[in-house]
Image (tube, rainbow, N blue to C red):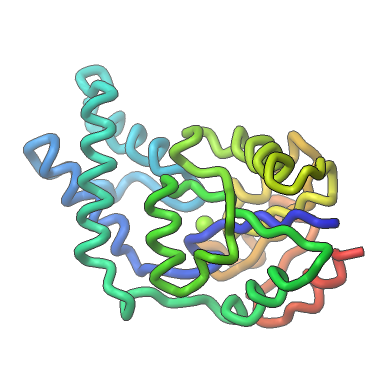
Length: 226
Ligand SMILES: [Mg+2]
């Protein structure tokens, strides 16, 4: 049996910089002045990590407290809810067919491994009609460091299914080097998909077990299932 853990942004869907603008609005609202985020890459990072890097880039990490952090993330969620109307989501090629197909297979369990905080993850997936396929996951709200998330997702899969997934039975699918890298600690199978900000050439340099231009051909993923 395989456990497939999917990243969201750049892997399942795209929101075309709406997240960056919403986070800038949230920062301005809570901090009281605009904090440009242009110098900080969001790709493959957890929301708390992105927020910390932005605050550090403005020299604000010392004067920011946990309460501010929570307030900014709450404001971010509110801005996202108001600006992310369904037509602003782009579902990436093949995903609408692949996810239900994998979910219907008896030898497969599906979960999330995403830097989004949990409410944001399910808000996005509900908007594209895929939330019901992902009963559990590990999220940016669990830990700011993505490398800590695979073990957590595996533990949640065990709690839900009674099965312990190890090594290459865990398949981590994502669009950045951080997705490829994060599962090394548990010996997971990494699948890079080139539908985010990085080309296949760039992702190949990080040596994923499998590299796919997009998810429109399910065959390479289905071949991983025993
Ligand atoms: Mg991503």
